Length: 395
Image (cartoon, rainbow, N blue to C red; front, side, top):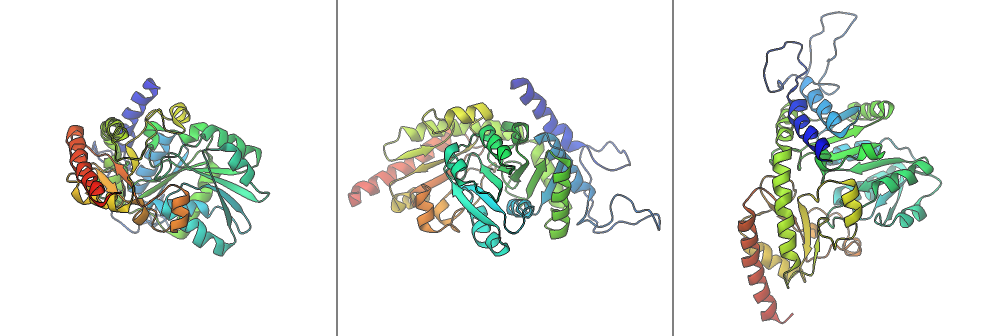
């Protein structure tokens, strides 16, 4: 694993510095082609680019980069993570059925439950930590099994290999949201997954300055079908954002390793705090799926969630924390604290959230690049204030 990881770290930089221009200038950065249209030299034979919705050299450089890093044959860049996800769902047809993990990003939940049914595409949720539960949910018209591992926000772990084998036995496609791990730490296509999806806004970008989505396929035909959807829907990533994302990918390894190391220390600290009821982090040996995650991933990542007793205590903690920003999203160089119930999973009804463990006291923490001792000290002072509030109200 270490040799592969070192090779991938090199690829993160090398693959993202190769431009598509036929003119070799020696520039270490891919050119930004800010052009909506391209002149054609011949009346009968057009060049490789005609209109930037259908293809742009800067976006193509990004798409080739993510395909290489994920070990796929075709990469596609979209205007957002949910644009990539929803476009991939458009590979399905009316009458098809999806089995999807119940612990899923709120935007995906919204699209599957409120948009797809209008087009005759059915769905069923299942506990993806239990392969038997997935098996029981498969129907005769099931065409897709949708995985998110680690899942958002409770970091549930799915056995990728087992689900892929199950899907193959039922002639189903598999999609996997790899946002939390990135190709640096998890390679779903190597485990047989058909389509890997990313909210590249997060760790791949890393600077909270780009909204972007990526999709990668191993199969050429499936890649061509998804490219047709991309061109038909037009939810493409612009040249400027494609360039910014390429720059972010170059530093992924050094950023992510530092954040993941800090995340482990913070998870251990929170696990020993009296006010914290539960910590969700696949790097803890007590975390369900710990062994499975270690088999299929090379890091626990840099996102953790922890449950405080109630909304009031969570509110007190957030209002007294000093270093992290309190915001939607994750994966930035700055630490980001969020409240899933009213942020990432606000689209999910309260009863559905609580069924999945997304209580009003649950907070999700994306660890940035600040000094870990400073972060822990900040947690300590904020938890102390929250503890005093709890004592005061007698709860």
